[in-house]
Image (tube, rainbow, N blue to C red):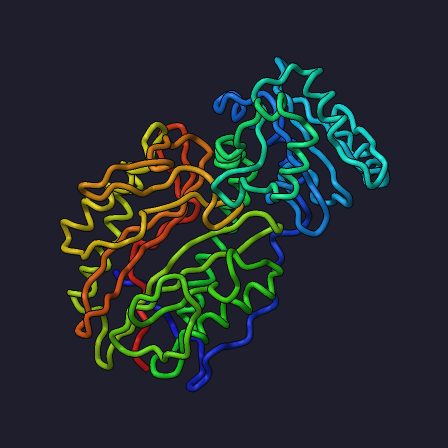
Length: 434
């Protein structure tokens, strides 16, 4: 069975008005979830990476990427948030200028909030805390990943002078710690992402239902989805100019939608993500095929390419389980893709998704024949990790360009395998001719 889309547009109308929406993502669950993440997940992350202390330096206007994750998103002057591994778990401390320190103390989330005069630095208190806890492996936010590279050059110089050579000799990049901690989501977070994924996929199908061949442009489909986001009070999952990425033509990668009018014989790709509660994002693709006049179903060749891409996605899904490494998932998908006669593609099979569309965690890449996996491609999958991943099929067009189907879904890793966050696309969406 094909999924046949009933046209919702009147002739010549490209984008209907959206109905009055429900707002399913009200309130702010993040403060409570953040406390739970620090309590339940940070100790294990510190143990896995051999870290016994973590220093995050915060400031106003150009804050550390980890600020909201540790609770210093409202820093005025320079502030320090420190976490110490103890037998009981993690002990958090804050060093804050007067003013903000009062609000921090009221939250009762820290063992102690140490107050400094505005305009002074945090380093006397920091050295005293490091001495009290006997820290020997101190993570600082400097690393290759932008998420883990929060210290500016000026802040690093101030830290070097403030801690002194003996303490600086005990520092290490916080990147492994941040990757470990952020890569696992709590059950409450997974539930939020599950609801957001369902809405993302639903809107993509609705956008195709509102498309008319020969009238609707890629930009019109994007406008439809942007209107849905605005009406429901959710944000873009990534850069607004490229979300959603709607493409009925040749491969264009991550890109803005154009004014190309959809035509019979087109495969339409919509790569779309939303951000809910200002924190969690989705990343899902849905594909449609535009029938020619007189056709009632997609041609056999088009359907075969779609099914090959879908089968690659399912092979990746079956390979995703605790203990599997990222390159093994990639290789499973590529074996199906190559057996189906697809051209090779430059993109990895998948990536973590959660706080960003391309989140921290294992890379589902490196499985190409003859390639040696490296870095996060060697990282094992663990329960609570969330991924967006594709099944690919790519072919050459007559002008030597390419067209690629990339069936992208979202999952969470469980104790026994992978679980869909929303039902995957099983059938090619069909847009009838006018």
